[in-house]
Image (cartoon, rainbow, N blue to C red; front, side, top):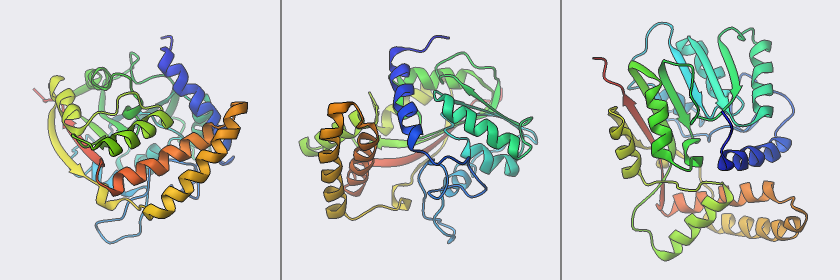
Length: 284
């Protein structure tokens, strides 16, 4: 299926950011020392902060068959699949709009002799997909959708009976002050997030598909956040750098970093919450 204009913009955005990713593929330990993936969280069980914590948390309310069929909708470099496939097994399909991510994830699957269990394809989560799946995960990816309700409907439509949809994403609080709303607008612009719905809209979109919400948790308190003054000073430096690089059309890396620092500031003041939602398709 041909990409929409928004999908093409996202693809170009990640094509540029991929230039700055480490050259080697994802190794056994996910997190900041390898390929960029979702953020590290403090471990409620007392372990070290890790990007793998969210994987364990999202499976707590999920009961899967012995050999599940799994879709990672917005897989990046495949770190979720590499972390969880040895735990839950099954056949995985990771989809991303970035050909570079597909190539690197595929090379890593081959290196680990997992090419038969892990496949990666360049496509949108709004496309027709080859399900049905027992589990669909979307970690920090649906926020880029221009129509999140439609995207959720498409993913839910590819679940098998009794299958699960797991969403982990940043969700603004309702009734923001003008100052926080302005910060949110900056974050959305920098990270190419046209809608970024609040939690109530995500729940409504899930329920409209006929899925049943079985878990809804605020994980914001587990995020490793910086100090407000330092974040603002760093963002100001990035904005100055972006101003002159933008004259050459070379400021996408800075835009991404500005968005990241702005998101941290929004999370620190409680304007945006990092939430986990798990929904199940009725088995009957």
